[in-house]
Image 1 (cartoon, rainbow, N blue to C red):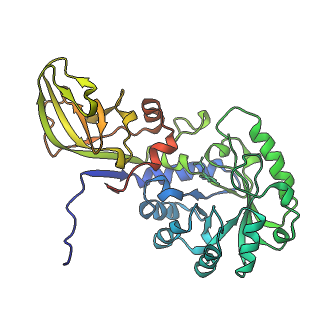
Image 2 (image 1 turned 90 degrees about the vertical axis):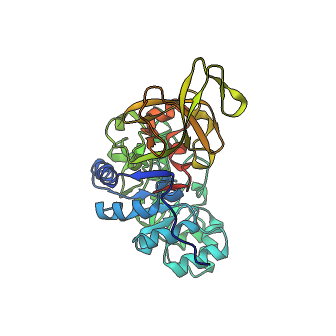
Image 3 (image 1 turned 45 degrees about the horizontal axis):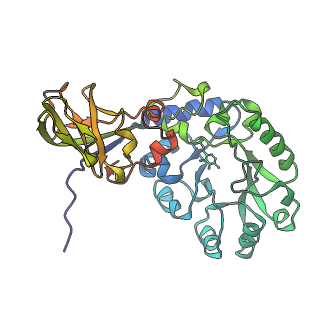
Length: 349
Ligand SMILES: *Cc1c(COP(=O)(O)O)cnc(C)c1O
C-alpha cells in the first residue's frame, strides 16, 4: 500500500536559523584570524542537520565536524562538500577507510593503528587528532614520530580541550603540549578551541575553531553568558484537559496528590523525546508566557501540568517547553549538551 502523508506532529522543534547564524557570526568574530567551523555531530546536537547545515553554510561556515560515518550522508545532502566534512572517530575498520575514500570525506586519524588502516586503503588528505591530556581519543604525543604518522598527508592537526569552561590551568598545559606536538607534524592547518576555548583568547585560536554548544545557544562559560541567542524551541500539543478532584493522584507512582480541585492538561512529552523524569521536580511548561507547573512524574510519553493560571488553555493548543539552556540545566540537573542531544525524533523539526 502507499502510505499517506503524515498528519502534523504533536511535537514541534522550531529552529531559529537567524539566531543560529548570529551565534556563528559572533563566534567567528571572536575567533579572530581563525575561521570558525562547526561541530555538528549527533544531528547537530539534536537540532537536525537538514536545517542547521544550510544555515551555517549561508552564514559562511566551511568546516564541519561529525563523529560517525553514518552522520556523513545527511550533511552531504544538506549541501556541504565532502572535503568540508571531518569524521572525528576516524577509521576504525577497513570498511570505514573505504567509505572515506569513496565519499571524499576526511577522517580524523586518532592512532598509529588508524593511520595504518588509512594508508592500507590508499590514504589521501586526512586530519590528525593529538591527545594533550584528556585521555579520550587521539594520538599520544609519544607516537608522533611513528613512521605511519610521518607518512600521513595532514590537512588539520587538532587537539581537544577537556575543561575550557573551567577556571583551571589544564587548558594552558594542553595549549603548551599542543604547540610542541604541532611542531613535530607537518599539517596545513591547526585547530584546538571548542566553544569555551574560543573565549580563552587568541593563543587558542590557531587556524580553525570548532564551536558546537554555543552555536546552538548553550552558554558554556561566563564569558559567553548573555551573548548567545536561543536557537531551539520545543512545543507540544495539549491532548486532554481534565478536572482532578482534591485528593486525586497524578501520574506514575502517584507522587502528586491534588491539594484542591484542579484543572490539568495532559501533553505529549516523554522519555523518548528526551524529556526525562528530572523535569518533573520543579519544571514547568508555558502558554502565552504563563507557567504551567509539571505535576507528578513524567509518565512515559506524557506530562500532566497545572493549568489553573491558564483557564483558556484548550485541547489542541500548543505549549512551550522553556528551553533556555542555562536555566533548563539548573531545573533538571542535566548538562546543556545533554539537554540538546536527547531531543528525540518525534519532534517535527
Ligand atoms: C564536540 C566537539 C567540539 C565542540 O565542542 P563544544 O564544547 O560543543 O563547543 C569540538 N571539538 C571536538 C573534537 C568535539 O568532539
